[in-house]
Length: 306
Image 1 (cartoon, one colour):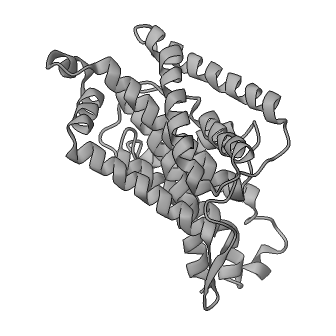
Image 2 (image 1 turned 180 degrees about the horizontal axis):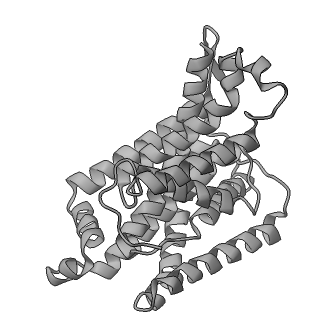
């Protein structure tokens, strides 16, 4: 039962990470450049939920559409300021501009909300459902349901709508898409809106259990980058798989001594399964993936990207 509880906890965390990674890879595919402000946009989503709750104290699930719309508008602003004016310059220019956006967002959040950790509103409340020894919190169930709904919605958008097909065509080859009459600039702007909206929702989902601070962006940016590296650079399904594997590792690795009590005497007090140790081991595994399978689990042949 303990293993099942860990698996559920990993699914919950992986669902939120998947939204961060999906937003990251959508912008990457559409522009060919990395949006280094993605993690800070997750942070902004958490604060957006908190600010909306202060203005209108309602369950987070009712505030979710407002967060989606507000973050989509912010995504358009990021595109207009950090990408379009610099798109014909070297890719490094866009990287730096998105880093600048992230720094602005971080310091703006610090100015408005202060450095202390804050909690976003719960989506459905603090209740829980018990099945034997398993505990399913309403917040956790809501996180999985929201993330699954958004991922399913994205699949329908990209696979079964004309708009989604135009987005995919723009991501695959902007020059050809433009030649056949697709408004490429509009599609890129729409991709920024979708990617940032996903980041904002992830921030709202995560800021209840993990709180939110102005400096959280770097951690979430790293999660997105690692998820895309594991799953396959530019692969949308790979981003989801990579996010899930990161969450599974983060939840299960520190709990290995509880799963396998025989490990405890062998450790002799060494903190080999602490949270800090799990970060070290995960990064070491990433290095191995980069060496032996640089295209990731679901990626095609490696492309030259920074």
